[in-house]
Amino acid sequence: MLRAARLALLGTLGALGLDEVALRTRWRRNRLLILGYHGVALDDEHQWDPTLYMPARVLRRRLQLIHEAGCHVLALDDAVRRLYDGELPPRSVVLTFDDGAYDFYARAFPIVETFGYPVTVYLTTFYAELNRPVYDSMASYLVWKGRGRVLRWPEVLGRHGDVALTDDGRRLVRERLWRYPVEHGLSGRDKDALLARLAARLEVDYDDILRRRLLQLMTLSEAGELARRGVDLQLHTHRHRVSLEEAVFAREVGDNRERLRRLRASEATHFCYPGGVTRREFLPWLRRSNIASATTCAPGIASRRHDRLLLPRYVDSAERSDAEFRGWLAGVAALLPRRRQAEAIGQFLEEPGAP
Ligand SMILES: [Zn+2]
Image: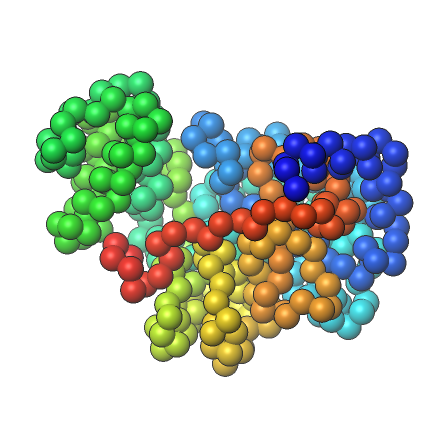
């Protein structure tokens, strides 16, 4: 169904009060809405990538809508257990945030805290431990910051010459920047230096971006502080990568779990697929790693009929309207056909460029 038609239908259902009715049905009561979030902007990140970042006011508005709909926001572990025991309270919702960005620590959590809602962070630990920007994202963000300029950089752009940073030009430069470290076997330190050089060429104040920790993960000590304040830290692989080999896949989960063990009182047993990449063969591997639940980026509302290792989520973004969000709280939006969310590319450890 076309997005416009779906939105119009949800608006009509809302105007008729049908989402209110749906919220009170037995159908909805037996279902769990797991909401997924990524970043909450510290500055202008939501203008760079509105599918990943939302302004703080949108998050606040979402939580207000959850409150007004009388939803029960449950802790993930409790919610999953109750889902399969058939003991969910009416209008159940779970809040999850992926990756563990610094903006969760600085911006999102203080908002969630004012509502008193439990929240899960699927924390990827490699960059949290390293405490430096994620190369691919930062390269893309810096190129966006330089939009409208002409980039002259023969070393990286080679035969492409000078590139005007229009939409097409930015795409070309991003691809060159993502491939360049692989072609030249750059280390993490080299990649950091390359980002600094890119920023200098674009006359972007990179020191300021680094100081304010845009697009960076929180440190493990900040994550530990949040855990002590009640945030549930769960698994998202160590390097934000999966593998088609069980031993490597299990090591990613194990390395991630080992870091979380130092921050949590109990063992982390809930998992979120990095980049939303799921494969059937992962399921027995996750079971052998004692994973109690795994969430995807496949839009939907969870019921007992779902495999607990393939739980759907509604990945929210700033581009969604109030009517659409209310439709999801009620569950009616899950019934309308829609396109499956694309998996992120570059999520396998076998691929070149993986950290
Ligand atoms: Zn992620």
